[in-house]
Length: 319
Image (tube, rainbow, N blue to C red; front, side, top):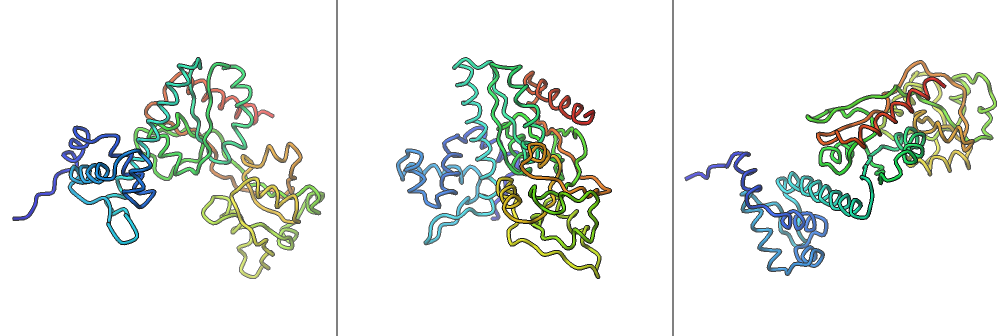
């Protein structure tokens, strides 16, 4: 007789009724360590208890979550589907515990913001100091992470709002508000010869040495389009490519190279004189930074922060 596969609603009901947070903690720990014994030690369980707990959650789901082999434990396809949920649940629980502790310690509230590098370097650098001064009892935490991680963080409640570019897919009930389009800037160290040139030409750019933007980010397509003529000489490339802003700034300072960076990322560093912009104008725009909000993002602190961000964008546009 063939076994009937339970529906997703049945599996969900089983987890709600009989699943425990300890199950999720164990699942994540085994996935990270590759060993039931090490996972048990990390979370303070005996190995027999951990083995039984793992068997319990696999029994609830009706499928193995790990493959047992000589080198340890490896997630199955089902385990790989469940593990992110376990991580997000534990992360949200930790954030909630931190919030309760902060409130008990006298904070007027806690606001957790996630942001990609461009969101931190641009909008948050401009608005956060004055916003914090206007809300002295509000504890503000900023997590910098890639956009796909921030979507998971917003959905799990780990952050209240994220500053990022619009996700390719926007699952309900998340919403996204774009603030303003972005533009590509060519930047270099302050002593680079092209910094002093008022109207650099495409030939000048092709003759320069470049730090190539990393594949997979929006600015890379702008770089590729700049040098896409089949008969045009390709520029000399620096051996290092990186999305790390401190590393990019140091390479621009120490080497005679150019690179392409969104204005939202590099604008403050140009303003502070750490690097300089090369006065070459592009015709197009980049997708701008916006606010990604989740189901529980309607708190007063989130609304106040969102309005402060809008005001920062309006002020920059009027300048």
